Length: 239
Image (cartoon, rainbow, N blue to C red):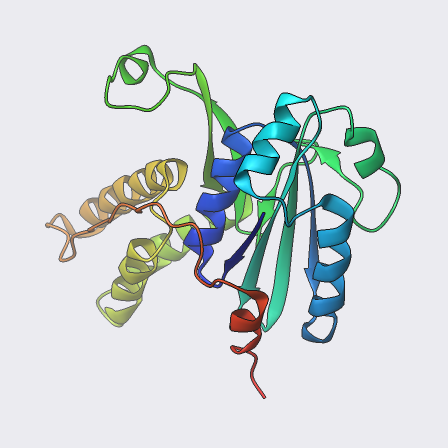
């Protein structure tokens, strides 16, 4: 199937969901506006992306690979980011032939989203696995987290924002706004918690007072698409 997204959280959530459901190989590429139609057409034919859910289920039952394509259109940069995700199966060998969309095992390398987030496998605590409200109790699961470079850059930003606050309080307010707008996925939320705790420590050390800001994080609801077709994404191209 093909998923059409123009919001980062939607695309990240869909990739995480597909990998959690069994995708073992991936490829990703950045495509300019002028080439997107031709590339999507080629990938659709090569990976049978028009299969229905029932057809995909039947093929997997027969031991064949099935593929999904997540298309993220970055409205700001006016670029397409494509993520091909394929399950293990007898037909995998034909998918992994050499080419600009050559597939690699998940985690070799990791899936990177816009150079800021990476998809990682984590081990869940026994207490979390015992939660009967969950749809599965696998000991390992997938989530997104900030890359080390991006995490360190935000940490450094807040340290500086605390120092300059008396002269420029807008910097700290801007940082809080950035954190609150990040994708509300588990791994990212955990990192935000660590960043905010570090910021509070820096603030109290510098001013011996309460932080003038609070942090409010939302949770993501499940969303399959932001759009129903490539044409809807192309309508967002800047002339």
